[in-house]
Image 1: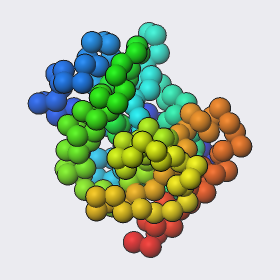
Image 2 (image 1 turned 90 degrees about the vertical axis):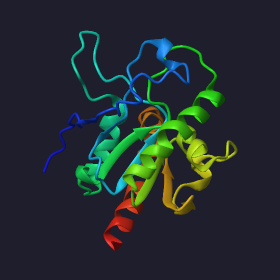
Image 3 (image 1 turned 135 degrees about the horizontal axis):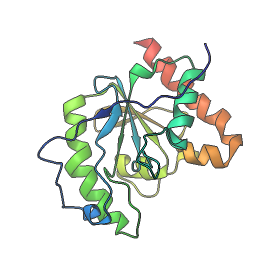
Image 4 (image 1 turned 60 degrees about the vertical axis):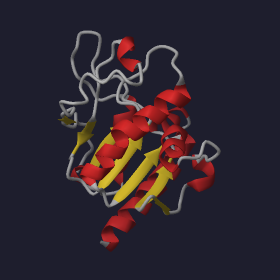
Length: 190
């Protein structure tokens, strides 16, 4: 079966969070994106922030991050219904902001609630920002931690390069596939 990227359905932003102003990113004018994919999925993918989702005319499209992730999912034989994608930051920053403070606020206000609500079987952190935020350690990096499973606050978690890094450095794609194969083998174990 050939690969065809698709726009995954967005998860609705909970009513009490829609107008959140705590982190200050609302001032940048981007809308809040809670997550996408299957909210009941056993695999929660955590990225740094949502990317562009619409072109200048407002038409939805599959950005490079989602395209690369979906292609790797397809190539490893995983079903896209097994995945739910969410973010440390729920809005796409387009200007300078206080990264440490903002990530900390969003991690504990939004992502912690999502984890409690979804209770995923596996967590896949893509990129250093997601890894450092979720693991709570700014010294960690994907290069040194990929290829293994970790227990983080009761969750089984692993890490992989950010899909945009993979796009910029195609030699990383093989490693990205290896990391998704690791996820596949864990899911297949049941």
